[in-house]
Image (cartoon, rainbow, N blue to C red; front, side, top):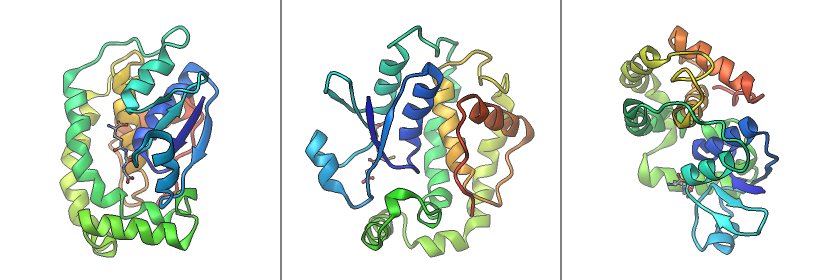
Length: 212
Ligand SMILES: N[C@@H](CCC(=O)N[C@@H](CS)C(=O)NCC(=O)O)C(=O)O
């Protein structure tokens, strides 16, 4: 199986963590940020993650891909799910975006490996989030708006090895968000959340992204 992805993309990390948990080999192909042609050639639109299955079929939609990989063998993500965790994962995205998306191009990631790729990202984000330097300068305010959500999810952690006590799709909803948020150097996860993040990343043998 081959995964077309951006290193910073949390939806791509959903797929990567599932493959690691399921012990399925995934060939990871990082697409340059401005390489729209590659994505369009595969699925006729600009989007990642894209999984190319071993039978050559492309798949889109991170959670569909996660379920597909999890069911290639004995499923791992069989624990209970809680609707409040899915709701949390939905509402966190707009609060995380100003903090994370302003930092991704500063981390030396392969999708930003050319000046053209970086320029493409800045232009794209300027039209949705605004100027990235201004977002960075506003880190304290954005962190203040984020912290209640982190306290909330901290209270929901039932075990450092699985948010609901047994591995489930909720881990796939939460861990990638935490991996993204951890790029904010000033951010301190509450204790239980930090234990969860560290033990889950160790479980899948993944290193955190750099933090700035
Ligand atoms: N519902 C899709 C959403 C995929 C998605 O929004 N991917 C983002 C990257 S995280 C993307 O491709 N954005 C368009 C772009 O980068 O131009 C999924 O869960 O896979």
